[in-house]
Image 1 (cartoon, helix red, strand yellow):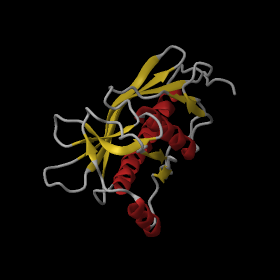
Image 2 (cartoon, rainbow, N blue to C red; image 1 turned 120 degrees about the vertical axis):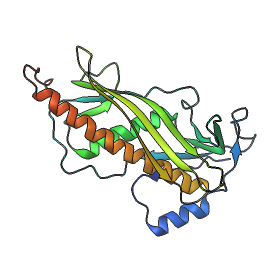
Image 3 (cartoon, one colour; image 1 turned 180 degrees about the horizontal axis):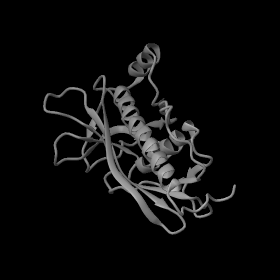
Length: 231
């Protein structure tokens, strides 16, 4: 059986595009932590999230290079399965639905794309051993799940990151914060739920972009700050 990869950008959806997505999406099936794998012969529907927001026009432009590390995460979130919660003390996954990579890698990709889309930094890349930069953004993925309430309606998606901006090469943390964004799914079906994941993550990414650029601009302007790495 062929796996289908559904691409869902975080940008606002047209009515026609959303209607096509919602019609094609299967009804939501829930599965507990003890059985997160699809049944034999039923490969999961794969979903990808991409940055689609519009960066704020008033963000400062910096001359420093930036690397984005893969966010850390607990075992429950460090998976390709799409997470949900039906009570404060339970954690489950949607059946037959998955991200194209582990959730932290998906979040890292959206962050990199969001920084690139801002056009405010000369070079932004994933953090790799072969690369060096002026700053590294380190983060922890604390929330990335669809939360159901007792009324049984469509869930609300929560995306949360704790971020630390590290100046290189001395590896000094110059700023840190925790931020969270949420989005209500329009319907209790997999398509609209993934749309809400994209909206929550994109809003969070846009916040992180603005926060990071402002901290870099302030740090590089402080007295005695070193010059950026040569290109």
